[in-house]
Amino acid sequence: MIAKRILAAACLLLLAACSRGGGGNQTVHAPDYLVRGNGAEIKSLDPHYIDGQWEANVVGDALVGLTTDAANGKPMPGAATSWETSADGLTWTFHVREHVWSDGEPVTAEDFVYAWRRIVDPATAAPYSYYLWLIKNAKPITDGKMPPSALGVEAPDDKTLVVHLEHPAPYMLEFLLHQAVFPVPRHVLLKKGNAWAKPENYVGNGPYLPREWVPNDHITMVKNPRFYDAAHVRLKTIIYKPTSDTLAALKAIRSGELDTQNLVPAAEITWMRQNIPHTLQLNTYLGVAYLTPNMRRKPFQDIRMRRAIALVIDRETLTTRILKLGEPAAYHFVPPDVANYPGGAHVDFQSMPYEQRLAKARWLMNQMGYGPDNHFHTTYDTTTSPDSKRGAAALQAMFRRVYIDVDIVNSDTQIFYKKLQTGDFDLGPGIWIGDFNDPGTFLDLLRAGSGNNYGGYANPRYDALMDRANQTLDLAARGALLRQAEQIALNDVAVIPTRFVVTQDIVEPYVKGWIPNVRDFNRSRWLWIDSKTRPERGN
Image (tube, rainbow, N blue to C red; front, side, top):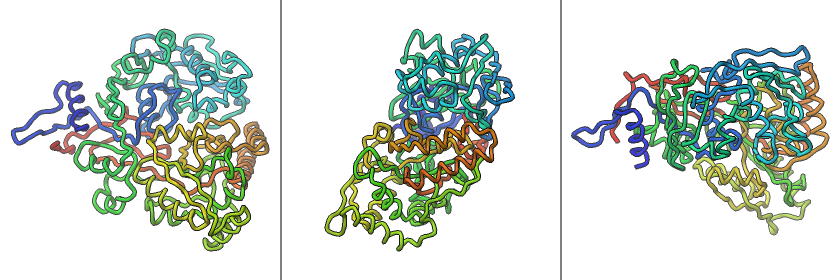
């Protein structure tokens, strides 16, 4: 029923995309719209209030930053056509493209200044405000010690944006791909306030605009005729559907109700490899899965408890017998082969046989007073997706081996991440996908005060090493300092890495322009439909 309503809406937008046949309902798949299974319901269309990749997928269709994602996921000129960097790497000057917002108003450098000041303003309470700590004075602003006007960004004229950094950033062009540094239409926000992000008020500078948002059902995006590269945007309509139930999403793919889907149901991976291998996209990803103990609560403040949990997790069983996606077990936090990083940090029990880990974990629990007749009772928060439930059940059985009984609490994705961000949990899983290809996007996560430092980890030694690394111009020396910082976090059991994730996409062969990349962003502007090979499916 949901799919029929969505497809009907698409038909109206396209004037004639559907027809009825004499034998029942028949859907004719027009070549200029795409239905994307997007994993979860989004919180907002405002780039300052989102933090999930499923949300970035939608907002990244509506807004374009100074650089933007090329078809292969690499940075290319976006709202800026060119830029220069000072010799010390601390000042970047961007030349803003001659282009307009979807209401016809010019996009100016001042829109970026306004947007960046807004996201670092503590009053905004943006989850990604820390992302801008790279910009001069951003951290003291987010800490409430300086006004937003002190941010190191200025607009000498409408088409020139000057950005001053706290330290050189070899990853700057990738950094600018992130939604936290997208522009917002200043002229609309001054009139509408936060209501600007409702579909009926939305103004963007990207290839698509939100036309309709039915919560927990779908978001319809339509082509923006004023987009500066509209002539090369092939698809007229994109429909995003929240698909946290990956088993149901697989059925929707098979019945033709979805053209792409992110994520896949791991329980069906064997069937998919045997029956639809041509649709699977399981590739190297810039991401790590981990467990977060809430160090604001007892007994997780005790490193012995955190270490016992880290020891008892059988990562190989999780990756090879439970999920079966080909993901490597993780014994460190920064994924392998990340740019500007030598690697080498790891937990000290990496080579220890599992039975020895188990004995060590039990010994630690005994030291804290727990044992066969005195179990520790706690909760494990996770989402409602089938794979989350399967993973939680496996962990529950592992924890029981060391006298830890956990009650599994399942919540919708939005509620789950809200609990993580507000510290309303005992134990919970996280998956972090790098915002850019550099170790800093992972290690900054564990800084005191970071908006996504779910467990509340704080170690002044760690933060000092991160500061030193950021002030180091030599990439090799910087990498060595970051490796030291990662080792400290691993020794402290700041987080408990479990596996290095792979991309999880199902893409029908008639969807063209999809290029696998380590950030797993395939912007809709680059995609198109081969109508000759796209089948007509019945509803």
